[in-house]
Length: 85
Image (cartoon, rainbow, N blue to C red; front, side, top):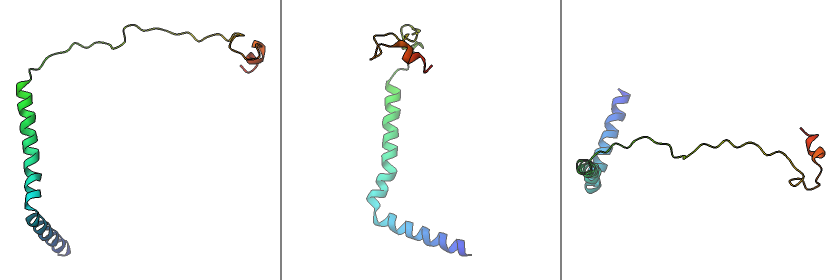
C-alpha cells in the first residue's frame, strides 16, 4: 500500500514537470533520434575498408644497461659506487 502511494505521487510529479517543460521534453525525445539518423546516414555513405594489422614499431631494440664508469661518477671512484651493490 505504502509503496503504491509513493510511486503514484512520483509519477504525478513527473507528469507535471514533463507537461510544464514540453519543449525540453520533446528535445529529450527528438535529439537522440536525430543523432541516430545522422550516424546511420554516415554509416551508409562510408564504405567499410579492411586495414591490415601492423606494428607501430619499426624494429625492436634490446638495450643493455650501461656499466658504471668514472665519467658518470662525480668523485671518479668506481669502488665507492660498487660497494653499495
